[in-house]
Length: 313
Image (cartoon, rainbow, N blue to C red):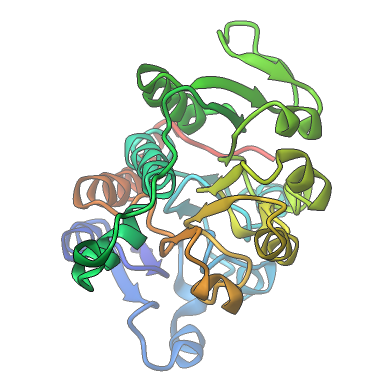
């Protein structure tokens, strides 16, 4: 049987061309009637390319008796039932490594934008306010302290960019990393009391849902700020909005939200908030590399080669 591949999220035109060389491609993300497409091809699908946002369910797997493999576009795989799929002999891979630099750059860029008040001052210069009065003074990164939640590949890249900028780095995670030069906090609230920035780059899912909550935000304090380039679920968004309104927290730089693509409406009118559109990996070079790794993983499985980036439960 020839391989039939369901592409559930955009891979770029070059990615789709490359996928065509691996088998018969069915463009789920581009289909006007996705349900009708599944009705037509589900029982023939052998490979799926998806991501955490689109996800994949066991109900879909039930409709695909010939499914062999799922290639996930992105590092995060919440929304994909890894353990259940593996029980059926269906492995899942992701795309770690290739997006580390892009996400780390955006995290630090948002920190700079928030600390130096870049969006508001840009708007003020365009509106002629500079001619009328002095622009208010801003904060700076140098001399500040940042606590990273999740010192994985991307967390380490963020840290490596902050150290030359004279930022003191610490971290919180499930366990201390023996080879890390940074201060470890087993208790997140304690870390929040001792830093100016909380940077979220931990996996999503039930285990980290609302890990940044009212208590953590209050410990961070009115001069502190939160950065989220992880998942929207990591921060209790309503608690963050309340803290920003009351002055309990000084600011936030957010690339992800609980109800994407709809940030909490109150965030849109706050000038101490920097907002992005879940675009941590959204550079041409990075998205091209991610798409290539998605297809390389499919090709490796087809050829019986070892899977380099298999996700385990």
